[in-house]
Image 1: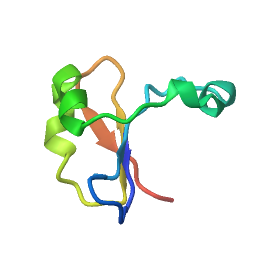
Image 2 (image 1 turned 90 degrees about the vertical axis):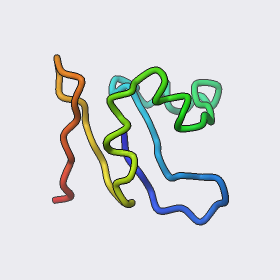
Image 3 (image 1 turned 45 degrees about the horizontal axis):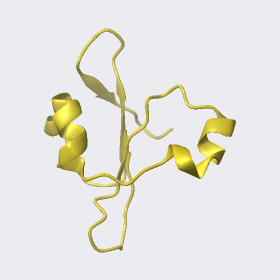
Image 4 (image 1 turned 180 degrees about the horizontal axis):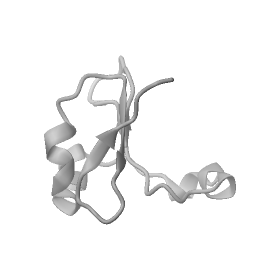
Length: 74
């Protein structure tokens, strides 16, 4: 999951992915959707502790855990 700086009303800047999307999947707009962050949190409550992190930021899920680690820009 990552958060972009946005200037659009109602856009929190959060973007969520499973991590296994390839280019052809991402190129198909029918594979994308707009959801309220609350909807995503209902499916994955472990994101809640990260939602107040200011943009820009990115996190990846730790395999086998319900936790995330911050991805630092290099």
